[in-house]
Length: 270
View 1: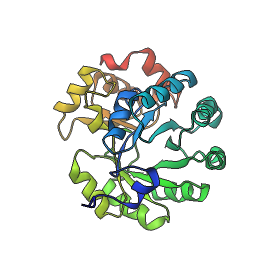
View 2 (view 1 turned 90 degrees about the vertical axis):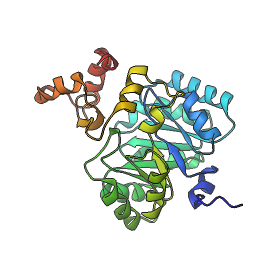
View 3 (view 1 turned 60 degrees about the vertical axis):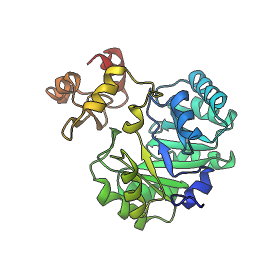
View 4 (view 1 turned 135 degrees about the vertical axis):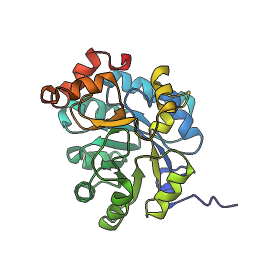
């Protein structure tokens, strides 16, 4: 019996279901990535906090756990900063790259020559258009409901506008928790959906147990969009850490300096 959820993007990525793991830094590591890919979706290594050696290790660990396709996600606002990790992606023969922040225009041609499919996360219609013009193969329209770095526009408004604005395939992201999110995404014209926080609560995720429980117990008003963690707007569970920084918002440093401060202060303790 044909898979009723199969979309053209499944053939592009060589997967069974149009379900994608968000490349969450510090969470989307080999066990979770492999589990999603093994189940028929596309696992994505969240490499934003990884140096080149750790990234190489995670790629190889993932391959030890699955022979299915998977991707690597990096933040791309500073091309020179991620050059060593991009070289690892090439050397290890990765076939899908996800730009979690900014359009990696400097690398797209080179990535295509290496046989990579390039996916760019977008929070506005103009970002999607810019990504297409730069040569991206797929864009992901991420609504403000998303955890982590996110924009201001709700997914119900953003996704159909992006679908109408570009010629390349569109994925939907933000607020996905179960099958209803996928069906809604397909109805809006997207070819698949990206799930992040939902997988963060999975046992394979490399997340602190306290954070996992906070996600499971969260209510509709339990999150806040704040610059306190990285210097760029990101949605997170309300914490004392975030509230403390928001009380002195003028002291929040730009990305990536604020991210360094958060790591030094052990944000998972809050």
